[in-house]
Image (cartoon, rainbow, N blue to C red):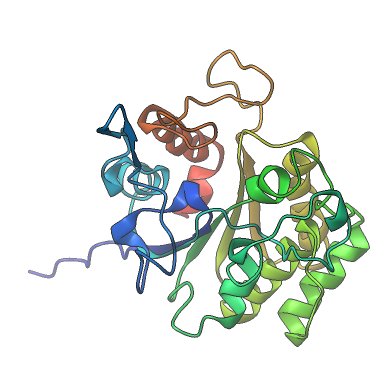
Length: 278
């Protein structure tokens, strides 16, 4: 008796910062090279205290991929704690306002990791989830739009085309150009990939709106580009104070706890689940 093969799994990769890390799910030398935040522990009164994201199954991406999507699996988790999407150094506009940089904003920023890591930076994915912007906005910018860049459609489109068609050098020293360029590089390397841009709750309105603008700008010149955006900014999980919607890991001001990661997976799936499953 012939039995139809099971529905093939969709391979899902993640490019992210500390919110998307987990120690055993960051490829190659994960304990040093990709500096995972989760699982988190610290010392209080000479005792070790742990957060409640204590398994990869507690992360937002595991819950989305394995608990919500119909047929998917993790391909690669390429995340680095503290990393920005754009390249931030002394040549970055507005740097003199903050004078803060480190490896997470240079060598290990999102675009640098993707461009220069030759050991399968995202594997061979069907879907790429890009979760970033919190560190561009808050860690280096002090909750400002100093590293956001222009929301000008033409600049986003130029960066995207250079990544997609040329693969040429781009000065990705602001968020909007860096993200547009990264989408272009992914489109060049994986023509049929679906790309989802996800923004954190603790960001300015500018960053929350940037991904939506990027999607509009890039799909306007590439109708076959599979690109969407979801934002947790003021998404309303709980009565919020400022932009802080989601409960955080114990001892952390910005890292979601286990309750929040469940909300994150559910919210993403509510917004774009049918598209991810197509």
